[in-house]
Image (cartoon, rainbow, N blue to C red; front, side, top):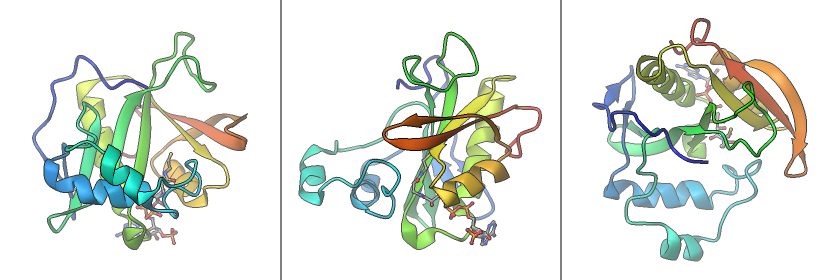
Length: 183
Ligand SMILES: CC(C)(COP(=O)(O)OP(=O)(O)OC[C@H]1O[C@@H](n2cnc3c(N)ncnc32)[C@H](O)[C@@H]1OP(=O)(O)O)[C@@H](O)C(=O)NCCC(=O)NCCS
């Protein structure tokens, strides 16, 4: 999946009620490694990666590309929200040529259950609506990922289809910019 080409990036940091959304910085590297090494975070994302491998492989500033926001709570990174182009080769599309903007999110388990992911995703979708007026956003998550499914529906995504990928049932949804809760 490639990033959002042709967008002015980075935007000014986005402030929500409790968070700041900004592009990744070198000081976020340890939190990125926590995210990538967490078994809880990767239960439905293909499993965690070994920490020693991550320490070697993760770049100095991970996640620095258009469409990737770091969510910061009280000065510390607690998660990421991304908007990327969905690979046309994969199942799940709402237009024949593919390349739809796709929302992704990962938060550290210690902040789950507080509404931070919803707050951050809503703000990122609001940014997207301003940068790409009228464009829909899609989202794909395992049906077994109950927290993610709840978040998707709260953000205004509606089911388009379900299919098998990576040996699991996937829920594929889309959000219209006119009806999305994040706009
Ligand atoms: C998916 C994920 C981001 C959801 O995190 P989350 O914290 O459950 O999501 P939200 O921010 O929407 O928080 C909602 C919860 O906070 C509670 N909450 C507490 N205070 C709140 C507030 N002020 N505002 C909103 N919700 C609040 C809600 O009641 C809800 O609780 P519930 O889950 O018990 O019903 C998280 O589980 C995660 O990072 N998973 C691993 C990565 C992953 O699987 N990503 C999917 C890739 S597509």
